[in-house]
Image 1 (cartoon, one colour):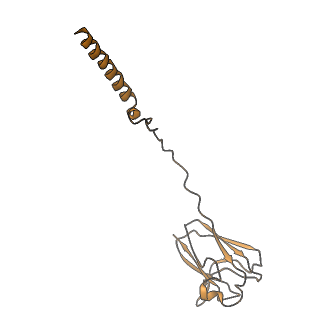
Image 2 (image 1 turned 180 degrees about the horizontal axis):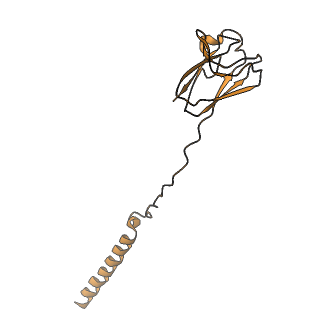
Image 3 (image 1 turned 90 degrees about the horizontal axis):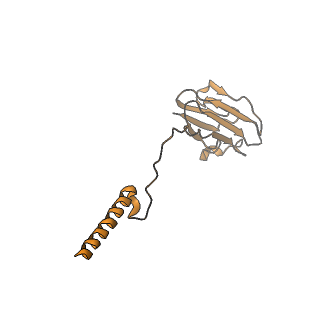
Length: 147
């Protein structure tokens, strides 16, 4: 009888130890440590993606308007306060002038004549859709959408 009580006590001790290990580390049975707690930290909002529009080589010759590739991309979407950059990658001088072919310039922005390799930038402070064209090559049309 003494031997039975000794075995029962030993088994009881082993069970108690096992339960204390499980209580201390719930992942003990799975062989995995308890997952680490993640603390969220306020992060800065992502930086805006730059909006760069190319006036590609050859856009000074009619034909690019049939595929909307006089300004690449033809249409760009930005957020209020973003700056759009136009790069003259053509060999001819161009303008980037807000307005439409039917109505003409609306006076919001105008690069003036800018030569090959030059850059023009404009910051859009108000939401809306803004059409623009090249005054020198009026088939060159583009659009900026500001949200």
